[in-house]
Length: 144
Length: 250
Image (cartoon, rainbow over all chains, first blue to last red; front, side, top):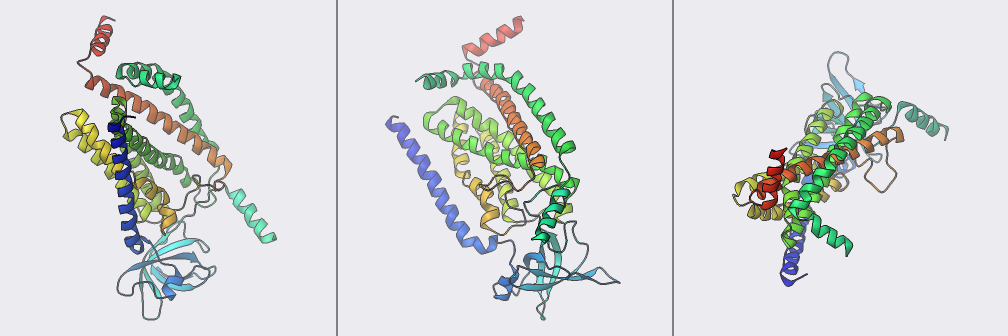
């Protein structure tokens, strides 16, 4: 490589390195804003904002869903296996909403520590399998 | 020595033009075979998912398109560096030709993701780190295309977009690791991780076939675009004039 090309190579390496460092610093300082949701433990630890809307994410606790007979209002509990928090929501739930599945709710805490959601989204995990395999996995887990 | 000799030869626009012309019919035939295999596997033989039912089948377009959106950017960035350092014309042509195809795949990944997101997540769009960084990628492709068309002199234009492509390359690891670094609504990686893929083998094989078909499509589209670009840039040269004469005599 002649000197001219070496200089250009060096310039490119410096450019990419500079941009990487800048991006790293920017993302570090925005880290908290890039978090899409807080876990129930974060909320119990007082990390969640109190004055504006935020999202809570976790698994829907088994047997915790209570529907009201005369309206679309429902209540369920969200857990991250360490802490749980009650969520209240009025509306239609997405297809993937199930007990034991991950969800993300957007809303605010009320005075009683109940999370009043304006929107409930279902989080899908990265596992894909046919129903037979899912059934046999379940059987296997029960047997253990 | 053999390889560098061969590379020097193929890097001349005339040789590259002819080489692509010879490859294209074979690549197109292979593309249709692999695409048919992948589509049949994905839409017919692959079992339905235990939670999403048949709706999961959009994975066979969404995931390969998303992979291509990242892969094409990497190809573009590498060629941008080569074009800036060695001033190789073919690399310049590959950078600009890839930008259009990459933008299309990014758009496809965003649209299919949105169509899946509405029934599954409950929303068309949300500003989580994965979705936002992929949208930034689309805008990066758009700005590369726009910048290229802003210059009259295409060699100057190539230099400008090469620098822009290299500045934007930092977005690629951010997109890939966004689901690891931050809490996101988008799920984590199913296939592109060091662990065993978390997808059943009968569903995985058509996915890999579709990914291969998408790669072939990129190669075909890239070669066709590159050939057009070469003709436009070299229209005054002797070999292009000869080529035109030959084809008008036929």
